[in-house]
Image 1 (cartoon, rainbow, N blue to C red):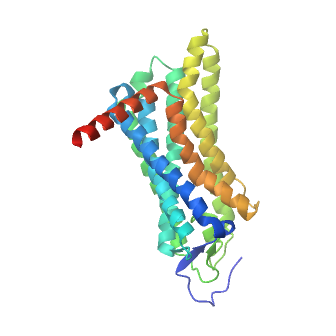
Image 2: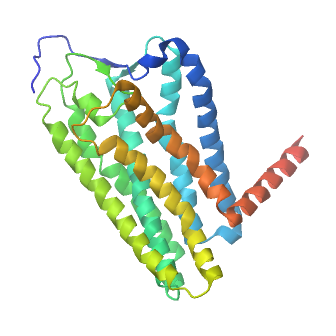
Image 3: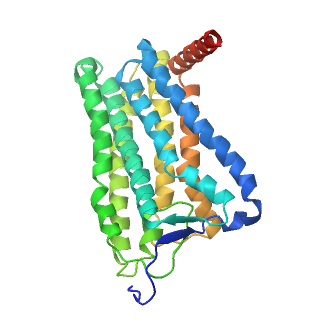
Amino acid sequence: MVRSNQTSAVTEFLFSGFPQFENGSFLLFIPLLIIYIFIVIGNLIIFFAVRLDTHLHNPMYHFISIFSFLEIWYTTATIPKMLSNLLSKKRTISISGCLLQMYFFHSLGNSEGILLTTMAIDRYVAICNPLRYPTIMTPQLCAQLSAASCIFGFLVLLPEIAWISTLPFCGPNQIHQIFCDFEPVLRLACTDTSMILIEDVIHAIAIIFSVLIIALSYIRIVTVILRIPSVEGRQKAFSTCASHLGVFVMFYGSVSLMYLRFSATFPPMLDTVIALMFAVLAPFFNPIIYSLRNKDMKIAIKKLLCFLKVFSTSAS
């Protein structure tokens, strides 16, 4: 579809993803603010607990700490703007601000997805090849894999964002979403929007490919675990994977609902709920999953909190 370029150029977009909360936006603002603070503090605690506890200096916890660090910025790319929109009558964002939000949000999301794939491979090597695990997953390789996840996650989106930045926007300026996303923004372009389908296919292939790698890794892991003769051994092996598997289901479950629908359309309320689950609720549950499901992590967090308590007491 091509739109006429007769109207004046658009300089900002208007968010219309919260229409159903017009009269009670403050009631949504409070829980969203609490969730955001919890996400930031929870992930900071996990990050520093892993960094400061030498017992957690191994590949699995290294990747968890990097994932927690990325989660802070992943949510910061969208939630503060959501909060300001809930309090403001003028729910706008500049085109450059919208492009930056899309770039950082999806780059961080890509980095997390690649890191989750790396974590699945790490668990595969640990359980399926335990004797060679220390020589394969060296600290140097872990650092390289973490850096590569972030670098690739940020580089892969540059061409797409650069292309969108060249598109003319001259017609309607309402983004029917609670944050800037590819499809809602592309639909506002005054040019051929058939590229939306190509965008959907590219994103779908990337998501399905990542899910297949992780799923195949865990199918192999489960078959190996089931061969362990002792019940205690099987439980211990399953416990090391349970947290990662939970985060994987939350992350890719919400991603699939958001981006594997192609031409299917949902009611505005359901669209907003899916977006909130994708951008807010999935990151909210990750610190809970990693801390409550892991004895070593709980011990490390207690040590960190005790240290902070002693430090604050001595400082005062």
